[in-house]
Image (cartoon, rainbow, N blue to C red; front, side, top):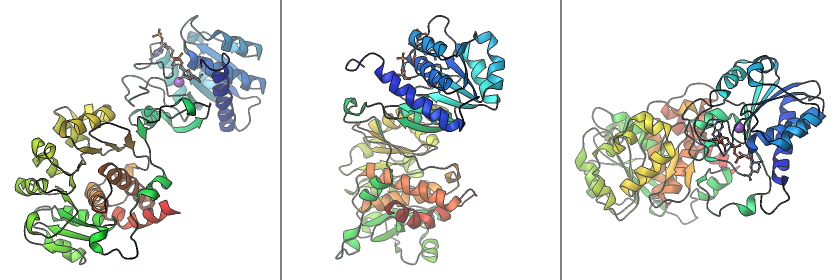
Length: 461
Ligand SMILES: NC(=O)C1=CN([C@@H]2O[C@H](COP(=O)(O)OP(=O)(O)OC[C@H]3O[C@@H](n4cnc5c(N)ncnc54)[C@H](OP(=O)(O)O)[C@@H]3O)[C@@H](O)[C@H]2O)[C@@H](O)CC1
Ligand SMILES: [K+]
């Protein structure tokens, strides 16, 4: 802002916002648009965009929510273009009749939920037939963390400026944003070299996936060891192996009491009836899915000097000091409930503040943490950008889905990926496989595993 003529960035933002609104409306002329306008520049963006829509023949009504604290230049521009201004107390009917409601209440300058005057109008907008477009962020969410501490706007579309904010990628805020459209306002040279968050795309994943060379034998491709399952839960072992077999490792070794069940389903598995130390060479271990109370095996695996993925019961059974003392990397893959137990807080607290929970757990254990859920996050213990996965689908929340993920991520660890890459790539493929398998219908965990090869091919297309 300091480097450009006054208001230049806001004009770029408003032009992008008006174009997105016009796209959504299809035809602008004769449409009814209501602007909910807060005290700051977020409201200014809405007012200038409203002026542009008014000049194209829309009927635009602005509702300033903070009395005279309103962007003066924006308000004057709207009035010059023929827009009208109404008091919040008289705005209900306009909202009911609107085709489009623009949320310019608050942007990156906001904290806490919607304030008293704004909440009823936001709720009325949600109940009306109008499309709701949020300016920069849905008002009421925390921009930097994705937390939602009170009432917040629910948008159909969020038009955001310059860069994606964490709230647009992390639940619960993400759910409020609807579709997100990024408008380039020329900030790129000013953005920090290292972002807070990274969301992998197809090309990133394709570049990270292991590709066997002509002379690769199974050891060079990596052997992954799975120490999972119990007499009571043999299925967890079968599902972890099913994920591991599709993850790029050259072979899958299984140790544990579910060897028969594993072999019956996957004869290609190398099954051993001895403990992890005597099972033969592996390049990474997965320990924990369905493991019951076998703390001895967890401790044995943690004492190895290869990468270890800790999941499910393994998370509960692992001693924190044993994890911290490891020389090779550790990847922990809790869901919110498991993370909450490890942090000693309520599950709701982890779900409400996923980003800080993942970072905190990674710091406490000195391990990479993949926090599963509606938005899966991967945080390294030393800080740096947190990976956020954008391919998830609610259909993934099915029994055994996590076992498939742990096998898949373990296989990628064995193939030589760093824990953060193994976790990020596994979450991406797992989510994509879930989407491809589900196609809008319920799926079982083994469907996800069987669709991993399609997801793998899809990212290379
Ligand atoms: N930066 C850039 O490069 C560009 C930025 N641009 C735009 O500017 C936006 C940021 O504008 P901004 O800094 O004026 O803050 P903004 O979000 O409008 O808040 C204003 C005031 O609201 C108040 N308030 C706080 N919480 C609240 C709540 N829950 N509910 C209600 N009110 C609340 C609080 O004042 P308070 O009432 O507490 O005194 C706060 O100071 C950004 O999101 C983007 O849209 C673009 O034009 C392009 C270039
Ligand atoms: K907003």
